[in-house]
Every structure is written in C-alpha cells, then in structure tokens.
Length: 335
Picture 1 (cartoon, one colour):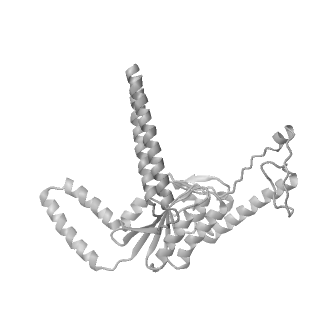
Picture 2: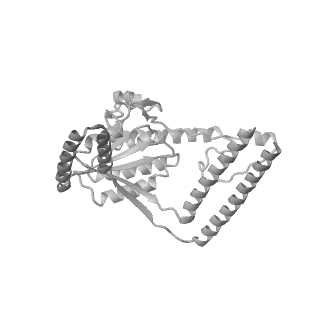
Picture 3: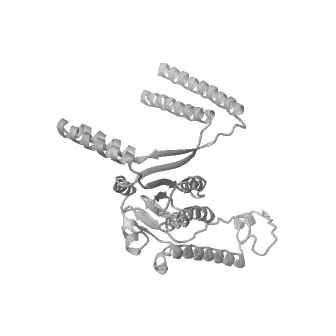
C-alpha cells in the first residue's frame, strides 16, 4: 500500500506542476495579446452538400454495384443540372437563448448579413430554442426577426425543443411556426421573484437605508421594507408588461384566443397546434430535407474568433481534466 500511496503522491505532484506551468504560460500569452482585437467570423455552410454526402455514403454501403453505378450516373446528371440552375435560397439560423438573451447580438449580425442579399423569393428559417428570459432582451430579438418580415422575406420558425415565454415572443413573429410533437410552446405570461431580507435585518438590529428620487423609483427591493403601495405598483407593472406581450402576439396572430392561451401555461406541440399557437407539426430536420431539392440550404452563424491564448487554455484545460481522471481512476482502483 505504501508503494501505491507513493505513486499516487508523485502523480499528484506532477499534476500540480503541469497545472502551474500551464497557468503561467496562459498568463504570459494573455499579457502579450492584451489589446489585440480579433474580428468576428461569419461562417457559411451549404447544407445541400452535407445532405448529399450523407445520401451518397449510405447508398455506397447498401446498394449493389450495378444499382450503385446507375445511381451515381443519375446523381451526376442531377448535380450538373442543379449547378447550372439559379435556385432560391433558404437561409438557416440557430438561436439558443438564455435568461438574458445573449445570443441576440449574434442574431442581429446574421440577419444583417442575410438582408444584404436575400430577396422575397427566398426564405429564412430560424431554429429557436429558449425557455425565455428578460423582457427587453427577447423584445430585442423579436425586433430583429421582424426586420426579415419588413423586408418581405418569408420567415419560418422551427421549435424542436422549447420556445416558451420570450422564446415564443420571438417565434410568433414568423409567417409560419413549425413545432416538434413534444416541443414546449407558449408560457405567455410574466413572472418576477424578489427575495426580501428586511425582517431578518430588523430582527438583528441592522438598518438598511436606500435613497431615491421619484415615488416609484424602487417599488420593491431585496433589503428594504416592501410597502403595500410599492407592492401594488410592482404588480401593476407586471400586468402592463403582460398586456404588451399579448398585444405583440395579437399583431402577428390576431385569431388567437388570448383568454385561453395567455395564462402563463405551456403546451406540447400537438396541443399548441390545436390552440393555433403553431401551424404544423414536424422537426426542423424533416422540413429541411423536404426543401433540399428545391432550394439552396445556406446555414449562417456569427461567431467570435478565439485568441491563441483562449485556444491554448481550452486545450490545456481538457488535457488537465483527462490527466486528473486517469489519476482519480488509479487511486480508486488501488482502494
């Protein structure tokens, strides 16, 4: 056991030394690269090529030589014909939202890029995945999508997993909403949670002073006493926000029964179809496959380039994680 303990101690020392050296190298690189600004990157991928390669791969492994030769000849003829044709474009964007809708900045740039070239004969498809978040953040994202409709370009939203609350605020802007059968849709409501520690502070003789100008500059706070007047005003503001949300939905889906759907509840895709919250049941994959013969499928994503130190940091972190896993496994097996 002493031998194994010595080996484990040695391995741990090596791990600590490597970690220290790596951290020092990353720190030096960060200092050297401080002030350098890397331009963002607009990535463009033709998904027709991706789907074509999948089709060819499965055929090459399943068809006999005679049929494969026939398919290859037919495929070459089709490919030649398609390369000579000018087809409409289907631009594809992915939006994965968090509470603060950080992806909105990338969405803005992606839409701006599309609007420099797209025409009303094209189409934009956005795969939205978001449980919602702050009102102003998702209001901004919905406004970005509205730019597409203002330009007269058909907008389709696909919901494969979830578009609730702010996510549905975005989705409703579309000309057409497509949902997977069990995707979560709706949650047309507003929620606010404010913990309050005033009684704890008062019990322990701790004073909390907050100075404001304006009767409702601070209606409720974490440490201050919540007055009936302040609480009523806060609730009124929530109701006003909910009214704005409902007006936004009515603008794009005037036939919806808001008394039925704007209750804060969410529904699964098939239920949402019955309520008129979505227009069709399908996955984004099936929709794209159905369009690949008629349109050029162009996926666009806006990303920030990583600095060399960031890439090194990611690689070093991964290496350390793997090394630690090996050490942990060795220690575990020795026991």
